[in-house]
Amino acid sequence: MLNYFFIERSLLKCRFLLYNAFSSRKQHFVQVQFHSRLQSVHYSSCVATCSFSDSVLELFGGLEFEPFKWNKVIRALATSENESPREAIRVFLFMRRWGVRPNEHTFPFLFKACASFSGLNEGRQIHSDVLKRGDLNFNVYVRNSLIHFYGSCKKILEAYKVFDEMPLRNVVSWNSIISATVECCWLSDSVELFVEMRSSETEPDETTMVIVLSACSELCCLNKGKWIHAQVIQKGLVVNCQLGTALVDMYGKCGDVEYANSVFSRMMHRNTWTWSAMILAFAQHGFALYALDLFNKMRNYDVKPSDVTFLGVLCACSHAGLVEDVLPYFNEMVQEHQIKPRMPHFCTVVDTLGRSGRLKEAYAFILNMPMEPDGILWRALLSACNIHDINDYMGIREKVREKLVEMEPRGCGNLVMLANNYAEAGLWEKATELRNGIRDRGLKKVAGESCIELAGSIFRFFSGDYSCVAADEVFLILDTFSLHARMIQV
Image (cartoon, rainbow, N blue to C red; front, side):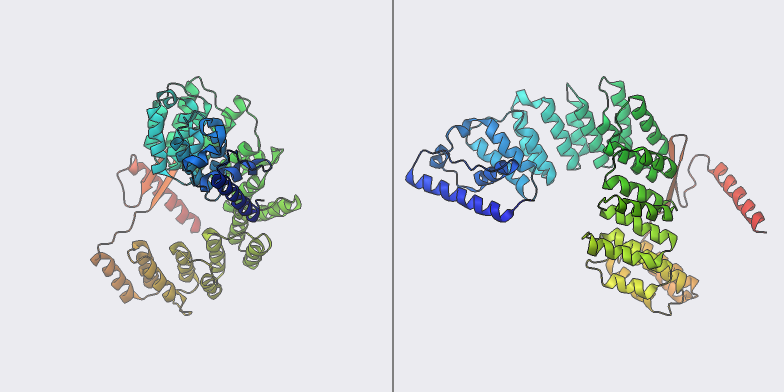
């Protein structure tokens, strides 16, 4: 744990020594020695905060023409927390002012610093400096860091441009561009790049598999996820904690809880994210009691839970109707583990209370939130009101309606939901008034969408759209299912 008070005092001493040495024009090299990594951080911060006149530069002896020491300072700042990554850019500017020529070890950490705070303009200027140096322009390590930088800044086309111009690529190059596509939500491209990588001479490693599995998780594409898993087995890759967690997460999000549990049970080493992925998989697919039992086992292993862990626990309570347990778990997260709840945690609690008809308690819980509730939270309560208090005897639905209209005045979905609620309650005048208002203001509701995976392909269907391939056959099958359902009811 960094002692910031000690750091501040040390930096002040550094500046005082530099000031005294400058005043007396003594030719001394001022060096502050600290232990381990703090040495670089404190020293580099001292360099970044002092006044750099020509006389002060003389105090640093041979430092001004030695890029190794500069790289060490830039690396320490680029990999530290808080505002230090920006300071790495400052140090680079002083380095250039002193006439020190950067090398292939300078730019990767500068691009990493820019990526950490999404400094697109700063990174582009540094990129232009790289282009001016022909010897570094096609350096594989510099190019890899450039791909990562543009991916972090959501500039996928520029990342592709850097990747396509590389004469030589290694496994990190492929990992960087695949990771960039995942960062920018070009998920299908990430799988295609993996296929292209297999046809090249570069062999994927464990990191590659983790990245591609994350894409399969977001796509909910089980077939491709299983194919990636088969590649892991075929190539004899080590299923370490990170790769095992990615597999559990992929199978869980794709709905194959049995496979997820099988991978989880065979893992020798598990961390908080492994347990959280398995708990969330159980909770989201109807195995609430398994999720809570696994959470208890996690506590017995003295594994510290995270916010994702408790999200899975709260989801389990919601799906199992354990309304009496949801608030104690929420309070345990906040009070005992000092975890700051996010909006999904609040939404899950409100959903659990709303499902059980405890509308007043859910409404009071929202009002006492430390952050401003969003539209999703209010819509969850509105849906609960439509189920348990359709005539609005408690007066909560009208309050929720006012909040939604205030927050999202052009939210057509909210107005349609309210109009439907009024219609179901028999308040036809209010429902007609709302629908006329939607039409007069030119608002349009976004069409509902669903998708299904079949034979490795994903088919998307939109509400009211009959232009899809084989639409007649699809509706024929749906009519057959509907007929069978009515026959069963009879």
